Image (tube, rainbow, N blue to C red; front, side):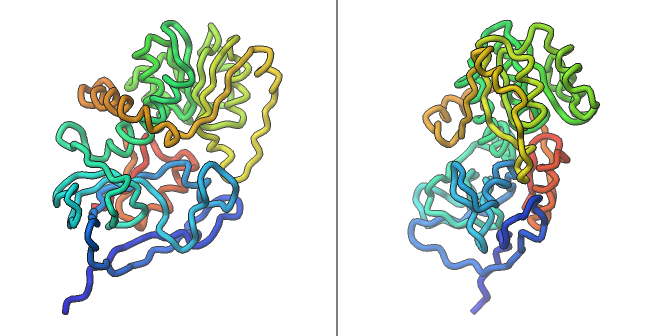
Amino acid sequence: MADAPLNRQILLVSRPEGEASVSNFKLVETPLAPLAEGQVRVRNHYLSLDPYMRGRMDDAKSYAPPQPLNEVMIGGTVGVVSESRNPKFAVGDSVVGMLGWQEYGTSDGTMLNQVDASRVPLSAYLGALGMPGVTAWYGLNGIIKPKTGETVVVSAASGAVGSVVGQLAKAAGCRAVGIAGGAEKCRYVVETLGFDACVDYKAGNLRADLKAAVPDGIDGYFENVGGEILNAVLARMNAFGRVAVCGMISGYDGKPLPLDAPRLILTQRLLLQGFIVYEHLDIWPQALKDLGERVATKKLLFRESIAEGLDKAPEALLGMLRGKNFGKQLVKLV
């Protein structure tokens, strides 16, 4: 009798103390069990790496339970069905799901969705046409609610979420201003994505450069970073401005994120709202329809950073948390 095929997986084996490290993870090989009735097996082609993963590594109160130790690390995936005992899925179907850091995922079909890879690359379903794109769409349209002529600012503007926010803001008739780290990323944001301006926070003149980029103040802000960037933006917010709080990546390793002038929330009558996109499943169909059409017609552009091989996932995640990625961070498994 032939040995069962092996599945390579990455487990979270320890909690970070301060900054996360490669030693928090372990690569293992596990035999694949035969499929039960109703199950489907997917050969994952791409693994999504996202900032929320750092928060799930901690055993702390949050909007979602911590990632259990000694289990496959959580993560979004796209791949192709390799075996099926589920009538809803056929071998060869392209699917997106949350099958985690492993080469093969087994599912009963729950939270596994078929996608069309004929018009757009399969990898896009983890970025502009996936959770990051819907996050951008909801934060902008559901919280900031931009009006023609307003100024919308987004931090981490060259990333998977921020790049979509700015392009959608431009399409809504707004002045779109990005904040990103480094001259190369800022050039991409302006010259390729079409933002009106981009502030390089690494240049050392954040407040002055931001003031110059938003002469009429800021009406809407999409927050991905927190810390000093949030403080600089709040100082330029117009009355009745709206802030969609998506992420605070600068504090994910336990660094404090003091708010310099909380009084501005009152004096400028600001709306600050945090959100988790999976709590708004009702808007996903509309968002994905809009995003899909824009991506297919090249009206919404995206960029990817791709690490090759499952074993590179921990290092790639740590690099993304430090801003080393350019665009959506993926791990290519096939």
